[in-house]
Image (cartoon, rainbow, N blue to C red; front, side, top):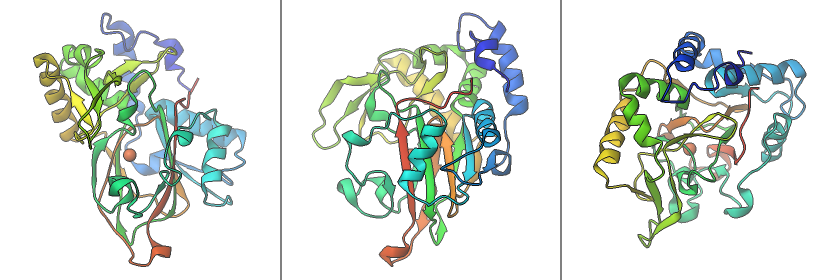
Length: 293
Ligand SMILES: [Fe+2]
């Protein structure tokens, strides 16, 4: 373990560079560059060993994510939630949402929302509609059935995106850490909610970086302040540049992702016409996060 959170507590403070520079160097030098570097093979995801847990937490510290293999466990939502409990995340948002909303398959539920379709999904973090005062900090996936073809994901650690932006122009981050960046907009009524609003980047009380963003604008009312517009343009261009730190891979049956809600995309899947063979991933989202130390 690197213990960056205790070693460099001021790394996200824009008023001082000392911690940031040291952390930046260590972080980029040890950042995984491929899916293979992110994989932890678990013998049974519902009963992980201490060594397996340590490896998951090590990768979470390096990249805020890891890819795991489920081992002997049943490929189910229960196994996914069980894995969460074993690494310290339990506060899901399930009770507030549609009962099938964490089964990612072409079901057409929720007005044929994108996750429940075979459309491609552009860069986003999950659940931007919650506001930055009550955000989803962890996102887990478990693949039961992959698509016939396609359906791969690209992922980018939010901390690497932070570094790319801070290198380019720290002022952009100062603006994206303001409280008025965007609010939730009801896509059906156009009603804007002041309660579900807030920042693009911020640190939680433990000193970890949080992030929320999506290219999807139908449920987001961005600030029309000229500084926020300019900062958003730079943020979007840095994401679209798809730096060398973007990792791409596909979750096959029995593989999953543990992440602190990192930025991700989904390539368009080619799905089976047979409902029993359609692509199916279980998803769990948590208000708490996987902490490395
Ligand atoms: Fe997502």
